[in-house]
Length: 183
Image: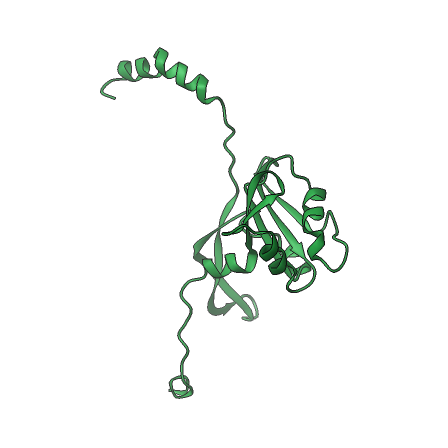
């Protein structure tokens, strides 16, 4: 705006007030983020045995991956997004139970992603105890491009966690022959 007076008039105009009333109020949700730590290839510390790390190029956002305990306790996991807030852990367990060989642990097999304030973000991780269960569930329930119907009132998008990891990976190193390695 050209002047403070024009800016004030624009903000206080009847049209802007009317549009703001139509839009309503929406909560802004944010997650904590930190830089990835990468090994430098050198050693340090008092006895020279500690591997030194530095800040890497990637930004790690809380909620992009399940917690370490959840990830290591399951053979595979599915990432769900666009979940309706009314969907519970019990609903998710019942939805995926037909594809599991043992009864699902309602509390331990689902991890909801929340913002810093503890509010739901519409995303969750679902863990599977046996290899192949997650793939079979997605194959049977998916209506193309990972869309799941029947898990709450809206369409939910699902991805295998390992596929999400592969999508995030940089270009893989090309295979090298034994001669190249020994040079």
